[in-house]
Length: 237
Image 1 (cartoon, rainbow, N blue to C red):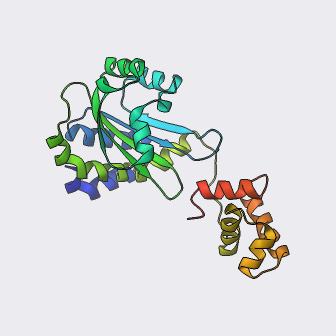
Image 2: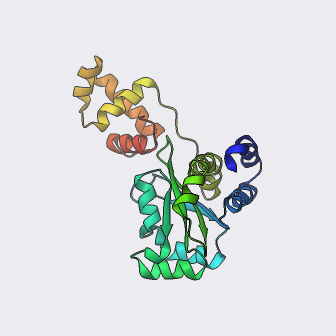
Image 3: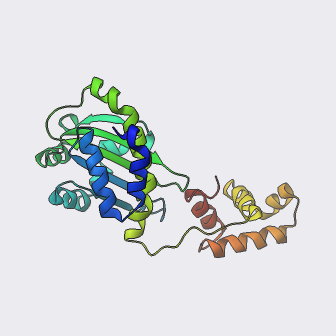
């Protein structure tokens, strides 16, 4: 059970690449009674088209279909995990989205559990354990629920950077000073430079100086864009 081997799992996930980590997590899923394991993360930027990265031991053809048909847009487990982080039991035979459900079941993804995780950077992670036959009963679910929650947290902490960086050339989020962060927070609230100056008891020129620094550091086109990028990246708290 994962709860009894948390340190071992953390060490295993922290060492090696994505493939090795996925192998360890697949074994944990199998120990919990689920042959299939999947992890996905939705990055908050760009705001207009957030990027989704996934890794799993699902059949390759199902992974391709899920991505090409953009099934994450209609997957009811994804909808649940974007709203709450408590584990959820699901059975694909009960999904309203029939074509999606039929394809999932044809590849052995019939029932399972999913867990949502959200981090300080605004990234939404999701862990799914699935199997083909035996439905996870409420009794079984109650027995493993604590392990599932911990598994979700450990998985996200271990894999999010590996997965995001796999297809990304982006650098780490910029470091903003306390003054820059405060100016952006008030800007995000819709305050003008003059209003921010009054609130912070500094000159409007100083406010605009900090805003200019934020725009440069965040590679933004204007102060609103900078405030949005800072907010969705978790910089504003």
